[in-house]
Amino acid sequence: MSVQTYDADLRSIQQARDLAVKAREAQRAFQFASQEEVDRICAAMVEAGMREAARLGRLAHDETGFGDPDHKRIKNEFAAKSVWESIKDIPTCGVLRHDEARKVVEIGWPVGVVAALTPSTNPTSTAIFKVLISVKARNACIVAPHPSAAQCTAEAVRVLVEAGEAAGMPVGLVSCLTEVALAGTQELMNHYATSLILATGGPGMVKAAHSVGKPALGVGPGNVPVYVDRTADILRAAADIVDSKAFDCSTICATEQTVVADRPIADELRRLMQERGAHWLTADEAERLGNRMFRPNGMMIADYVGRTPQAIARLAGLTVPDSARILVADLGGVGPAHPLSREKLTTVLGFMVEDGWRAGCERSIQLLHFGGDGHSLVIHSQDEESILAFGIEKPAFRILVNTWGTLGAIGATTGVMPSMTLGPGGLGGSVSSDNITVHHLLNVKRLAYHLRDVPPEARRASQGGWASDQRWDQPASTGNGSLDVAAIERLVKMVLEEMKE
Image (cartoon, rainbow, N blue to C red):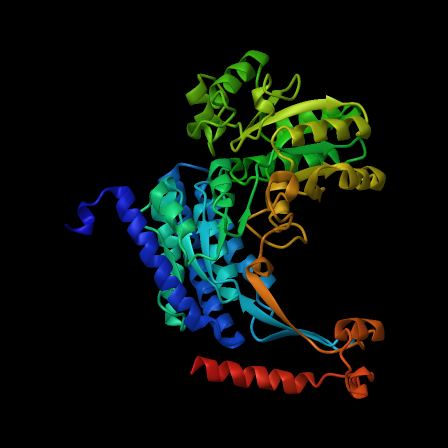
């Protein structure tokens, strides 16, 4: 029987097994590559990703229906160029660092085979990002696409593989499932050759990744509040909120979800947002939309994800002007009785008013607890006390000040590490609160030299009643207390060259 006659899930399982075995073989051949080889391969993939960014953005939009093709191009360029600029000078091969005072030498070591699960909302950009941070740390990477974005994701990976292999990357080090089924993704995660799971996507997929029993790095939902204080630059805040929410139709999980406006400036903020293209729904329209956008369990219906206001209006039976860039609904509260207070990965924004930053602080915490713990929060303010209070008190690990939620959280407009995978920490069910990057896919060995003498009482206790030679009780020699780091690095390089042979 031909493999092509098997059921789709069986074909996916077999492909996952084949790719995992090939990836482990390729990774073992690559694990002693020099820094120069690794960086040359990564740079070639970055160049290819930049060259094809617009085409891949168009493919992602056409296949999924989500967002804006040009915005997806920008995200592809960010995932290639910005991510590479942030990691290209990070050492990952051989001796990474040495601490002469503590007499410790740190040596880079790859994790192994990374199973990279990618979403439908940012399919090509996430694939580019995960391949780069994996290969930079000398790992293999197998991308498992979301079924609704399988073709564009596979094409993005193909572009990188072609460039990487032309620059010397081992065949099979990077690959993508093209027989896409849940069974195949599960097989890839559970396969003995897989070392770590890097999961970006919906709650169900991330939960499955964490349930496998292997090391896993996952994301969480981002029900991001944006608090606008009375001291804020209101014009700038209005522009940032509308522009950020409209960007790629709100398909980045750090996009603003509900505005919490300080009462003295709430009317002005509303007016300025309307001038920027924010269309306010009536109470009846908001109720109708909230009832249609979500399933009874609170999950968004996919037809509404990443859509323009006009597309949403057609689905929900509303009338909105062609000039509308986002839809805004006044919220009477937070929780299941107020569906639009949930995370909304589309061009719909909630709006609430509170009097003073303390009340705004409490409302923001309430929103985070309702589906966004650990993720992100935006504050527009000139009051450093308010800003610091939000930073200290909020259960969010990215507090973005006077900037976009979308591009700020991923590191495009701020100084956090550029990343397409944002950890929500223990609050959100992840082992990391970081913007995931190459550090998280790099193990570190440590040569730790003798530094301090064993306490005499410990030596006596360990010897018991044994009559040892007196010389064993003498202090150990520590030499001149310094490491010949240059010599160590030469030895490491020599050993690596021998192992490659």
